Image (cartoon, rainbow, N blue to C red; front, top):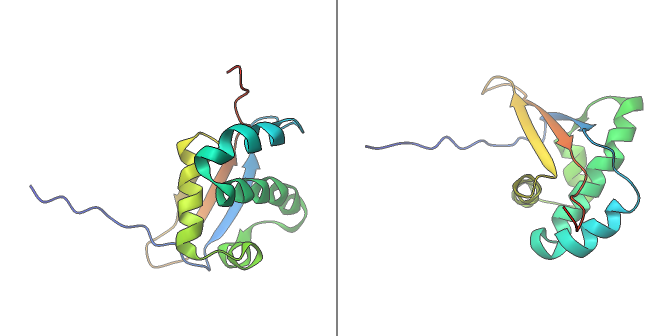
Length: 119
């Protein structure tokens, strides 16, 4: 049986919004750096922090393009996708995509607080 896996290509023109799904406190930053960064890496932690800040910016300015994110963070598309996958793997981000294959796609990123050391 030949199953073809469909590759999702991220275009820099694709639009996204960020929504904070849980309360994120100041002490979560220490948890993120001390517990998560050794597992997911510094790029993923930086992307998480960018998403948190971007959620506030989007309340004023609305959705953003991935192009502006890639330029601001100085990431390639593949580096961004790898970092996003790491965040998803540890439950810090959930991503949803809508849109037609040939048109601009719309992404929603839901951000979750890190688990505490006790949890």
